[in-house]
Length: 339
Ligand SMILES: [Zn+2]
Ligand SMILES: [Zn+2]
Image 1 (cartoon, rainbow, N blue to C red):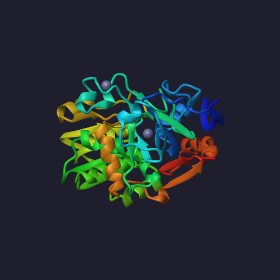
Image 2 (image 1 turned 30 degrees about the vertical axis):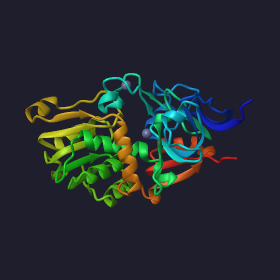
Image 3 (image 1 turned 135 degrees about the horizontal axis):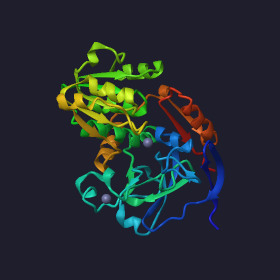
Image 4 (image 1 turned 120 degrees about the vertical axis):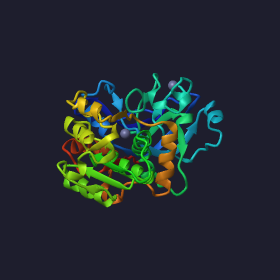
């Protein structure tokens, strides 16, 4: 009999409890990871509310995590020959086929058979998680388990900046200073973008954006009138989508990242007349993920401790509630006591 482990189980809208469940069965191509930190992602909040068709109960959420290798499956040893038990790792939770036209052209995020831990596959809000060996990424020596758990949201920021073709000397707007917005600001800065404006309604988040070097302005500010080379919408509401377009100069680019509402009113005729390029940005490729790990290890990305919090797994449901109420903490990590 496999020993049970503790896991935070989503059991229905607003229902989440720590339960004893069996250890994940280890497939030959998988690695078992003892979870250290598991971040709560904004995308999981709608799941907790029962508003996300991909997240069906019972489900273990969590896809932003680090931990230590506990066991390595038989064929996994060949897939990741350098991996050893005890290694500190993070995981690219977007599992893709590796063979389709998208996977072969560094656009893994578009793979038709992609599966995400925390939605299609069990997540990391648990003592252990089993993941396919090729998704496991060793942490560089100077990257902490805590900051390493930012690799996934950081990869979203890296991807948005890359696909938005951000270049040195440009001017950008980032709408929304939540974790993705903040990490996008860092990714834009790392590509040499010179001036980054940021808009957010929350005073603490505005302060966070400012300390990342962004110029925090009101949506009505003159600086946002057809001035930016590119705008990144890290919210996904009609107001921020329209703001991003209005702030972009003729011939500029708008990068859509936030998924808040499905349909939004947008002045498309304006986009036509001013030749605004519209760029959807979803997830990240493997290369983006590795770039994010490097940037975190080099301190070029990351979230200061003062903006984050660590909570025991047992407080998980309360943390989901708090984030739904609009907490301004940039990231809450659940830690999993191993006993
Ligand atoms: Zn996430
Ligand atoms: Zn594929």
